[in-house]
Amino acid sequence: MAGKLSRLWIVNVISFSLFSLLSVTGLMNWLLLPRGYGHAGFLVSLRHSLMTIHEWTALLFMIVIGVHISLHWAYVKKTLDSYRKTK
Image (cartoon, rainbow, N blue to C red; front, side):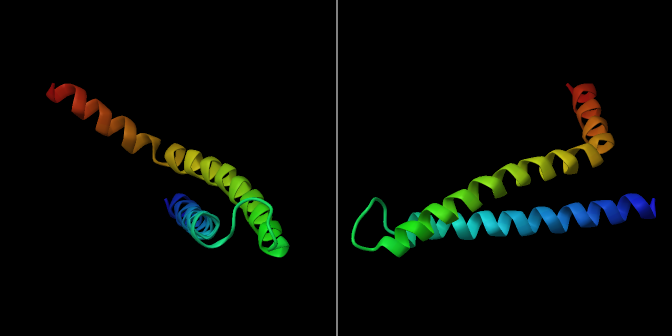
């Protein structure tokens, strides 16, 4: 049980970190950095770099959430079974 709990803790920390990075890069791209090609070349370049980071982070986040769900699969299955029995 201790091994599973440590895996869950690690997965939760990684998923929180990835979600935080997704939030920061998404909000910066949406609210702060200019769109298109104008006279602010560095900021547009930064925007494209952050978009790449955002996309890769999203992919990693989906993978980690899949691992998270698989680690909780017994609970998910038990909850769904009890929900079906009450209907």
